[in-house]
Image (cartoon, rainbow, N blue to C red; front, side):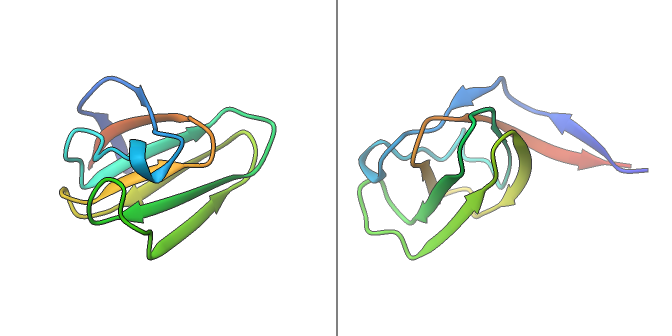
Length: 88
């Protein structure tokens, strides 16, 4: 059975490409959309850069995002994010 290991405390994602964050240089991020709407997110190589990869999350959902530690993410509205890993 796989378990989630929380590595750092939850933070809020930036709500624009200019406020993007690497979430503590995480390679695996747990995202929690606790809003009543669909969230759009982007993955950038640097803060403020044009996003090349987008994703959406339904309302009240949790997703795990794998990315390079140097990549930054942002979402259309601030949502909760934690640096995590997986254990067996």
